[in-house]
Length: 167
Image (cartoon, rainbow, N blue to C red; front, side, top):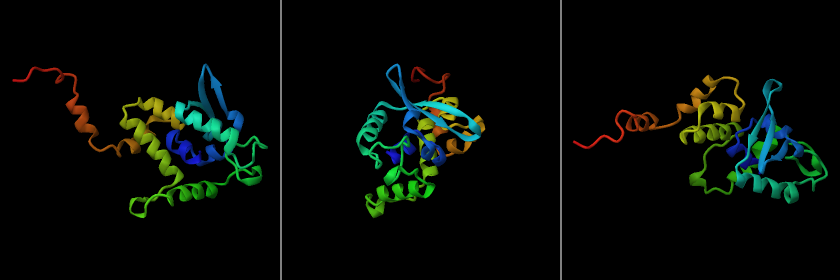
């Protein structure tokens, strides 16, 4: 669940470890995560349906505390996870990947992955900014630099050159 949330929603580690069960709510059939971010700002991020389904199963059956705590991601006994615990979870998941396919993965790297995938799929930059909880659009510049071939695609789809009859 931890790796799934990091890779699809892109929270900061501090936001993930502070999450409580009640921070995940449903409105009009859509599951949201109310994320308490930097600077006391909150944002409500809709979860993809597949992620919401896995989250529900995790909350009902998968939490180490057996449901005796408000904390969403916790260690045995219901204790809140620390930053190092999150990296340990990633390391355990990564140990299942064949050695020749492993890369260095960190929680913040998964946040970058979220941003890069959203931008590569042409999601509006302001929407990506809000999902990640950035205060300024300029912060997304570093993620955009990771999109190989982006300029080539943009020029191939230039509006003045589309639907031109072949000469």
